[in-house]
Length: 395
Image 1 (cartoon, rainbow, N blue to C red):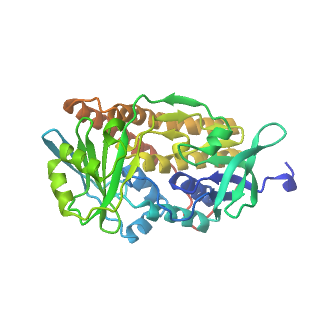
Image 2: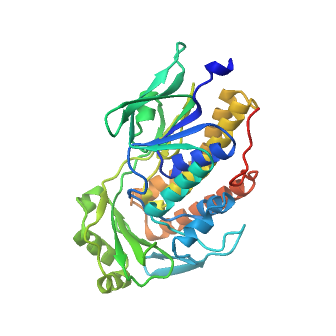
């Protein structure tokens, strides 16, 4: 391809949340020409449990961003407490691989940190751009995106690759006709809000059949409190529903909630089956919930997004640099993602079904913990990414 025929960008990434912003950051640090677009505005809130597992904290640490999360006042989490039936099981967070604590930043904190880091690395970042379709070349290969800006102007951008990081209802996935390769059988609903002044000690996960709840300390002296149950039980959600289910899953938590300042409003996720899409094709790839979604009850979505952003960024760089054929690099991305995700997907589907017994849920959670350990090992073995200010250019 002659120089004047090269696309304007190596990659256009649609969606500037955790998965998209992290992918843009890493590609830009690898020296690629990156455009990151989002229909919303920088720093807007979104549905989230906030909790990062060890793998997610490890990624932020490896990329040099954990200090910014801490500086934003995100409280460290040194203990996780599990409650099932009458058992209370506290688990200390042991320092490992440079991770001494877990963190659960609000999305109004984490997303801008990732976006700002992507921009600092050289990515072109544009908010207020709603992508409506992909464009294709004469061979049918995806070669860009089309949409409109907030002011109504037509927006077009060409790229070697288009990355859909635009969530569970991904426009990119729809337009490239990415097939669903696996779908779960369970649907749970969640309602949650942020209490102020709630007495807590780290992450709290309470498991009762059809009445699970949790506490996640986050920024501003607040804690995200959620309940998960069948959609029938959650209904439209709200404070009354949450307090009733919390009282079933953990009476002591219900007492502490009553002593804290309740939020003015709660948010409700009515549920969706987990799904795994084929996440690559000619000129396109998917990352985050666009390619792989599971119920939020196991609180692993953001950690998945940070993990998969690096797996995809490395694959795209290898393809563009000519280190691997494109199909081999991208197929390898999905294969590794699926290998790391399979156990999480299966266990989350069972847990979200709320059909387990008190004994069974403990076994399920132990298996989940073992899978997290395997994931951390994989991430810790990845080569370092270029630090801020040091780019690795393609030849």
